[in-house]
Length: 132
Image (cartoon, rainbow, N blue to C red; front, side, top):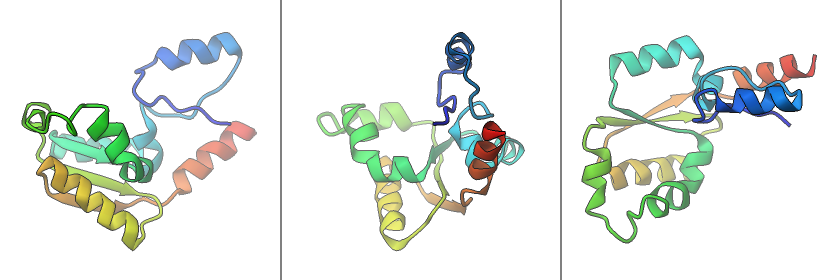
């Protein structure tokens, strides 16, 4: 099993150290798909970028819409996402169904969608490195 720092901004490192575990590299899972430098440049070029992975595309209604209460209070969308300018889907395994779901997620946020096919090569390499 591999652990990535998906939003703990280093807090996971203390837990991994305590348990004697190594985690996947990067500040968050997005680095594993897009590459740290590429992602940093992408966010620097357009800071108002909302990122999606295949997991987030599949689970958008549950992990974003319901968790933020947008299903009950849709007017909160503008409060939450007023400063975002686009959605970037870091597509690991794009297919027509996921493309449709990604577009629906972007539409739900009222933002244009950009699709970046990343594949899983970086993740696979990072997992191989952990196993060595």
